[in-house]
Amino acid sequence: MNIKPAKQFLEQPYWQHLAKGKLFLNSCNDCGSSHHPPSPICPKCRSFNTGWKEASGKATLNSFTVVRHAVHPHLEQDVPYIVTLVDLEEGVRLVSGIPAGMEVDLKVGMALECKVIQKDEDFALPYFVPVDADKA
Ligand SMILES: [Zn+2]
Image (cartoon, rainbow, N blue to C red; front, side, top):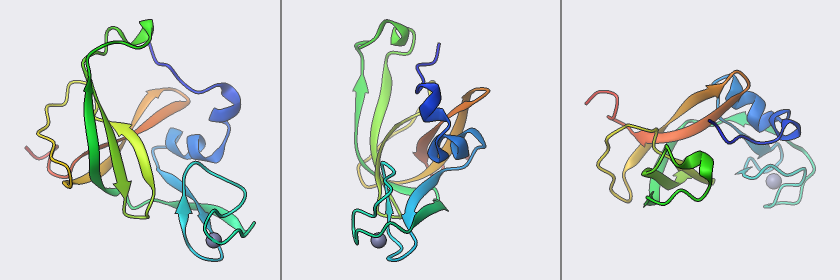
């Protein structure tokens, strides 16, 4: 079973783009910076002129941990799983994870790429995997 955001959140652009398989970031049309979570005001220059830009999908692993204790009954079948902290090329830091069942050898500072995984018909999550994970 998936734990997913409430319907009113899934209707927001960030989640709508993910449901279509794309990672978009809230970005400022004046200074060009990207930010997350989305905001109607640019946190860098305070402009209200914000929009959405597709992310490159390139990131660096900042940190990670292996979760072995299910913090919610719906996660019991998922443990152990890996939670990651990733720094996107656009300057945004996201909490993400490694897809279930993927064997990886993680090292802080390694290059990662985004892999959007559909969880159900209207809900997808961005995972970040080592660049060569699919080729190994
Ligand atoms: Zn700005």
